[in-house]
Image (cartoon, rainbow, N blue to C red):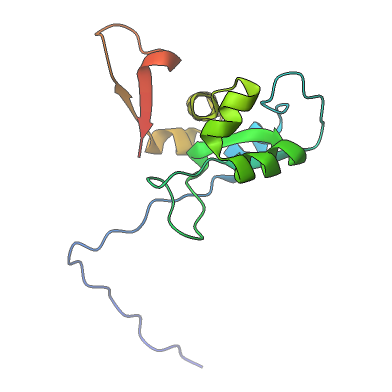
Length: 133
């Protein structure tokens, strides 16, 4: 049986959305301990950090916005929000997510990122870099 002919999509500036799921990066992040200091949990979740800029209603953010949290802290982070969670535990989850993305062994994912230097003309460090997509 023959299939119907394949339709061609018009190229009227339609862009394919950027890939958001990177399994190799997720496995690598989950291979680390919980980001909360002194948490000894060994079962780790890949926790997405949400903001109004990186995800809409009922949508998961890109995997570059992910950190390693145990289940207890993952649930707590969702109920408190990132800022309150950071204040409670003295963490900076956004900086940790950026560092996970920067050091990820997933070369394909890193290739889709643009590292933008904010200040200075020297070497880019984790403190002076923002990841954009």
